Amino acid sequence: MNSEAPKRNNTARSLVHTGPGTPMGALLRRYWVPTLLSSEIAEPDGPQKRVTIMGEKLIAFRDSEGKVGLIDEFCSHRGASLFFARNEENGLRCSYHGLKFNRHGECVEVPSWPKACATMGLKAYPCIERAGIVWAYMGPSGKQPDPPGVEWCTLPDSHVFVSKRLQECNYLQAMEGGIDTAHVSYVHRYEVDDDPMHLNTKANEYIKADGNVIFEVEDTPFGLSLYGRRNGEPDSYYWRVTQWLFPWYTLIPPFGEHPLGGHAFVPIDDGNCWVWSINFRPDRALTPDERHHMEEGKGIHCEYEPGGSWRPKANKDNDYLIDRQAQKEKRAYSGVFGFASQDASLQESMGPIQDLDREKLLPTDRAIVMVRSRLNQAMQALQRGEEPPAIAADKQAIRSAGVLLPKGDKPQDWAKSHLHNAMDQPVHSL
Image (cartoon, rainbow, N blue to C red; front, side, top):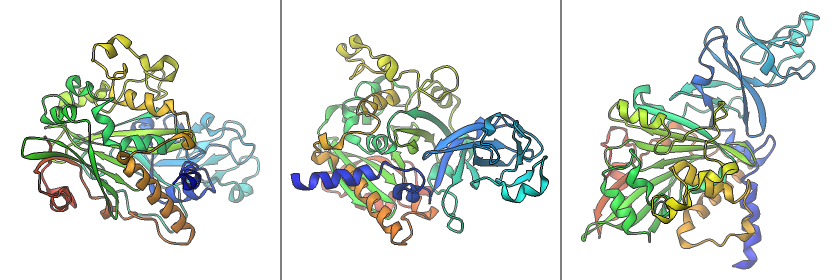
């Protein structure tokens, strides 16, 4: 067992490196990539935004026609940043020497040497907008998949709320926290009693009463289904059915009548990532109260530092505003408040890239091992010329759930008839 640990850890490390030319970067670029909120570039000819995704420095803007462009940040002439360009008349004009680029990266004007236009183009990525997010396809031409098919991307804007936050560790580290349902009984133990997105549900009772989660993990075409079993009523088990979807999505079971949830974990570079947090209701619009709580940073969302950096207000520089008295009084299990801050405090405490030689995994970590394995297999298969898994939108039509089942029932059988292609099914929660 020990002799295989270095090989296992080297494999996991290779999953963290996502820059241009890396095997993992090549795999992730074959999927639609959440890059920024549509609201960040809401105005045609408005201010452009710097965007770094998988180590690539890019500029996002909305042109005069309202179409989104995502192009290389640096002018092809002298390398000046197009952050300082003028966004005007369907393109960005570099403030240094007046070269102009449209949303396709084509150079349309070189004032000092017009015939040079054809040789001065920039890298550009196709973009679409879904669920208030600008998505980019960063892979090879001719391989662009259909738009993403996760359920929250298919709903009216009134049914969905999306936020993002900066997390100062690699995407895999953050994502592995998202698939670990065992930690809910600990770090989030007291938060479920007070957070308005989790109040008055039977799920809270089961989660707090039984911290010894029994896991069953199912390999699926879209990724993994995770079945976390806790004691329910005397004749039943409470099952939380969560999913990991290729390559970076997780789905969170709802609590009672509150909205469903999910995340996407997208690399900024090898040591930082964007954590996208989504709440949605397939069957109705979000209520004003629900939306207000989300905007305030409740539930899986967060409050931010001032200045528009998307960095959480509770961060490593202030020890996540830890309150030792609240920890002692059992108001916050770790002393940190807020689901997002609780997760980030522990995941970032491992360092930007965790030293995997020091980890000693337990049976409850089976899903983490399987995710690493599935990603590694897909990465190697792509190098052999095989297509990535779950690239088709219909592979992503899956839903999470919380359900009480008689002790003899298999949750996999229940999920097959209630959660796969679940768009027309009722929401299952407790």
